[in-house]
Image (cartoon, rainbow, N blue to C red; front, top):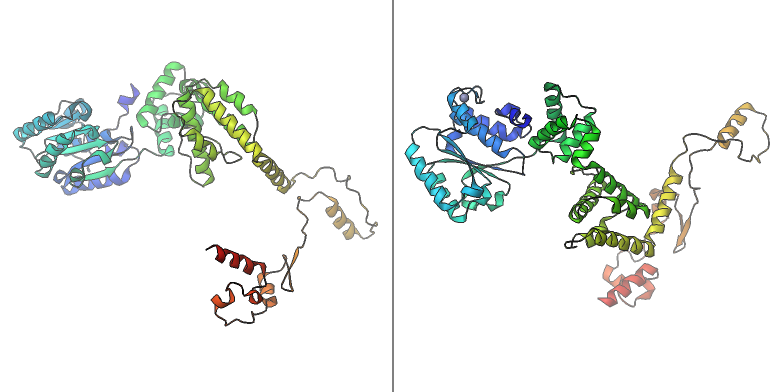
Length: 455
Ligand SMILES: [Zn+2]
């Protein structure tokens, strides 16, 4: 199995989390690693337990090489095959009772001889009962045991424990890191792949979890090869593509969106979750943030976020509820005139795009008299050729208090035109006071007066 073969057993083969690894290796080098218990917090599949196991192995290794466990000595081998007397890996989900934890601590005192023994890796540590956590606290404080708490929910670990362990925030690898890793595995295993984009899809559809991505490679080999078509089948990628297409259609108010959605062969929960995900992703992209989702969703033409207002609270919907909700949204948008506005905007955008390929030049009627001068002719031709479309610049002029402005003037010109207010030094409250119409001739002053009345 590729996932077992490529499970890291050295710090150097872990992808990402360099900061955490540097701290652990510094502690291994300066001999302070045994002074602490540790907590590895992070999302499912990010490598918390793997990192805890490598750390534990480094703590017991008889032949530590540059802060890396050798992987060859008796102690390392025992950790790797789960027979170590010093390193015990337990699942807190089934082992997290106070009796078990007390037993573990009692057992620890019996073995308490070596400086690096009694290391307990507690998986799913958030499942430890409150009493078990209390029992653990005392043992951690007395350094009777070394605990490595691995948890997806660090907030569920009691504060006194959290304040007594060194806490590491473990992250999933980046897309580039993971794709490079699976690419290398494919090359090392002589597994051909059709395109790097296929590997990107594998990484994303495996939730960026290295182990799941490697298992997927194994499955794809058994399906006949690592290629786009098999990846589409394995992960139902076509359903994501259809949903993306449907939402894009919705964003340009194309009614065919509803036909596409109805063809998606997934559960209503899947549909609800992925519509939410896709729209959230669109918002992320429009805010200039990167896409965080496994399928690369598009940026949509119009704002779909108001769909979320109704979709998120929808409880246990069926597919027809969701489609009805979207149709309702569509009709509401149409009635509000939003659709029209969007259509106009699209037109404006199209007009603003310069025409790169000049088309039929002759069609433009030339009313100007013929010019003999060659340069003039050239200029005339340039004028006749379709130029980037521009809205004709109209100068608007505004008159306020006898001062004329036009919008082509710069701020400096305007400054010169504005006369100082006569009662410049007059108290501002007096000038703006209610009823004093003589000093408030401009509409804005009327507004302020009205506003003040309201207060
Ligand atoms: Zn070793």
